Image 1 (cartoon, rainbow, N blue to C red):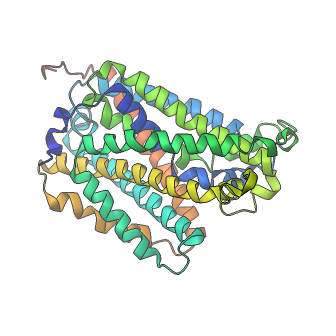
Image 2: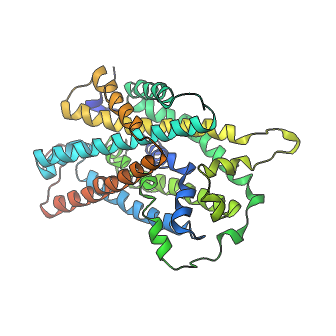
Image 3: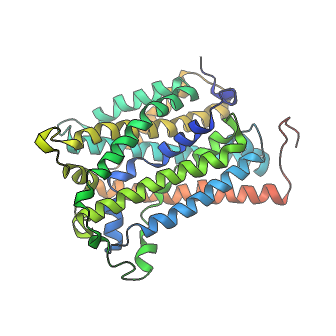
Length: 372
């Protein structure tokens, strides 16, 4: 049976950590991110804000790695009480679990809305969510290795489909749709930063993965490259979608990337609906992302209680289901997105920075043998 309290015995390679970070970052936001940025900026300057957010995200990864490397062998949940004390450390752990819970529930709800709108119109949202959540729980029961092996299996497929989606739309690309650059200065770019925090999340994976890596000294390499790949894919997709369809058209579409995929035409009608392939593999991609966050949730609960059983693995699914069903419409879903983004920045960027500063100022660190 899997033993998550001793998950440090389940070591993963550098490439597995890299792919896990990439699969966590690059996920649900891709289908709607071009629209949200286009609506906010109302200019062709859609990629600059993402690039700026990417640079900030890489900086956060650096902070995470530096923090975790000061406490070899300890997970993020274990090092918090050492730095901040038991009570404050407990509050930080609860906040991190709450963050992962909100992200996971939002990802699941967006997946359900996406499938309902495009393929399962008569199926209730709840009936789409239930099997999805149960599969997530089942995968988590298999432990860390089961999760990373699934990522290794499906990530290449999703990456290939992404590249095909871009390459097969090159003939529709019009550079004029991305001009003029900086037409209204920096203000629209800074405005776009207000709507993309959620899509830049995922760097917090390195907080959990650093000290379960076979070579934790390579955590910076895995985290920075993995995060950069994911954000690079975001920038490329947003640029291509706007370049092929214009800001005005993208801002009116609910799922602009699906319309982007529907533009693809194969000679001789070899494959009439490429978007079907995209929807299938994108759903698998969302499953990997949601599974990653759910694993972080049960890892935290298990290490806080020092127990691991079926209740810990499956009971949080009830909370996820209720939270996923709470938003009543797309307006509420959008507000939930913003709350998650800002709360995530506070918990996963500001708090680790403060913890790192405290550990450096007060010389709180730990050797591999456990001595402080």
